[in-house]
Image (cartoon, rainbow, N blue to C red):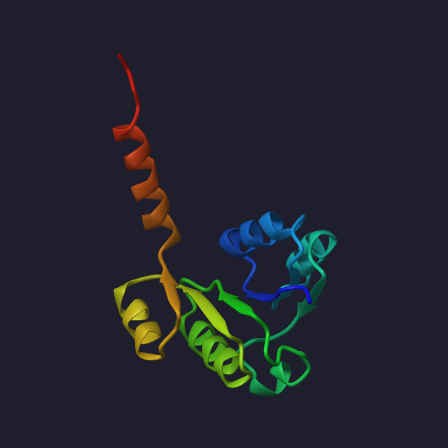
Amino acid sequence: MRKQCIIVGLGKYGKAIAKKLEDSKVEVLAVDSDMNVIEQVSPYVTKAVCLDVTSEESWEKLPVKDFDVGVVCFGENIAASILSCMILQERGVKYIIAKAGNKLHKNILNRLNIDEVVFPEEFVGETTAENILNLNME
């Protein structure tokens, strides 16, 4: 059976994840509230859905029960992030990764027992610094 992943929020971070998974054997359900974004990503995901993630009723339309992985990609919209994470947990998503926009957001996500909380910009900055330190310039 193919691994199933739901990506909620398709800004730069969410789109990058979806594109990277395009040629994999992962079934990707992409969710965003902007129809233009949905149209952009639909060619490289299994299914793309336009949905207001701040509405619990909207989530009833999505078949996400027992997905393997959920990625919540809201750094700025903390309410959408928290609600999305809670709903994915309630639906039995096995592993949840959430983007945090600041330390308070990170603390809230940690209290929700989110499996992995990330700061993409910080991670890329640290990776770039490591690359600089490992350059052999002699």
